[in-house]
Image 1 (tube, rainbow, N blue to C red):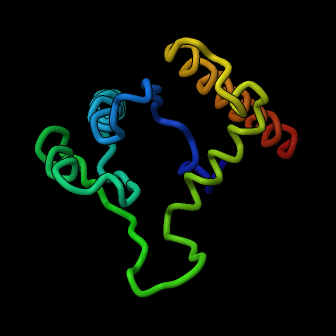
Image 2: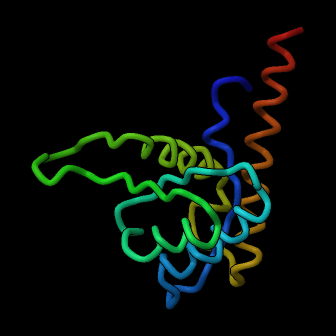
Length: 133
């Protein structure tokens, strides 16, 4: 569908709880950069600051832009680009299987995320096909 390419899933990695987000991000970014060669910019949460920014630039030629909340703001504030991720999470949570951690293995949890995203993309394709007809 035109105008909404930003909320498509490029990659997933599910890890056990003892693996930190930054370590998992290095693995995920390596997979995504290897698959999507034209990717140049990645937006990330404020928790991914530090050496990961330099690692992305040096290893994958990716600019890791950190979306931070301003220190002087109070209460709820919509952060730029963050709504794209939150909208994708909302779409994925429509799959009952992803609402809770039912999976015993990380590989089956990843497969369920891919399956859910496939269903979302299929519905979008069908909707755009019927709109043209």
